[in-house]
Image (cartoon, rainbow, N blue to C red; front, top):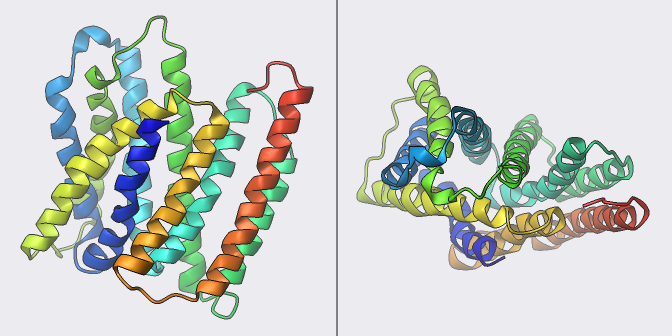
Length: 291
């Protein structure tokens, strides 16, 4: 749990750094490419091919391409459509996706989880019930794309490492994760990137922090932590980032927000997740071997 907790504290600042200083000022494709390239440089010297098979390397690259590469493309565009608090609130769906994908891999399904997801959607609508613009709705869907990629990557990494014939030193193979993400970020920037490059030392400093620490160390710590906890704990820790990120955004940056409506929407989403956990706990009691 310590790995997930440390990463949560680090990532809590990332939302505001992107939303306040990079969104609309630096091309999102370039920002994504820079973060992933820096993270790759952190772990490339640690790569030890003797701990890899071609199959494992390919699987790690595929997970990195989805969890980091495709997710970042969605994630950065969300800040062009939504405020930082809205992006944070809408990440609350990730635990539901984690539960559903984990059940899919395990070969079981509980329709009750869909009820919790629909309740969470209602909470999201309440946050902006008087301003459901097309941009807002598109932004909501963009965040869900990021959530789904992040959830699939976490669960897939956990399952992959748990099914290796012998323990794998994760730091010695994690460069493959970033190389897979780079295979998405590089062509995305080449084909779709714009001309808004970092123009101040602050821009470059934030990208260095995000690339070396938030992405490089952060994703290693997070995925390593995911292999050490059960799926329920992993789902809960995905939501710990929300209050931490909101505190940073609302207090340190002084960003205005409709706090009562934000809290009401978040309360409904939290109720959805509580119901999700209740169904999950009940299933563990009634289905032998249910994780």
